[in-house]
Image (cartoon, rainbow, N blue to C red; front, top):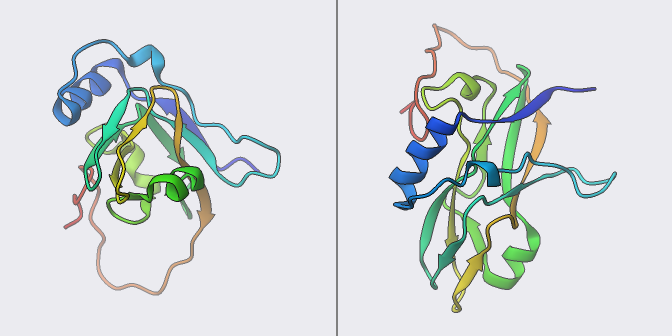
Length: 161
């Protein structure tokens, strides 16, 4: 059963976010790779970094993936570090687990999935351009009874207060 589709954000959105987050100049848009599973039994879709990111011990970065994801209502995409980076460098997400809601697809930033990472090890590390660094897993979720009207999403990080 298909519940989601990955696609690239626009070239303009990627360039804007790249410049704001990484202060990099250049055209890396063609280096964006659509996430895929490595094996038939893989739950996670591997995200590749379109740029090289160097992290000293304790240093963090926000990496624009260039990817957005249309997700059916009732499902969520959760983002986790790939285990190899966790074991070697104690690479962690800045928010521990990335949660990509179905309505994020229509956010003001085109639903651009930006991943915040931190190197918790005592040695420098490099995420090479094109290297798989995080994985996304789709999960079904359930709702409790709610009262009141829910607001419509606009922005990205912290946009729902």
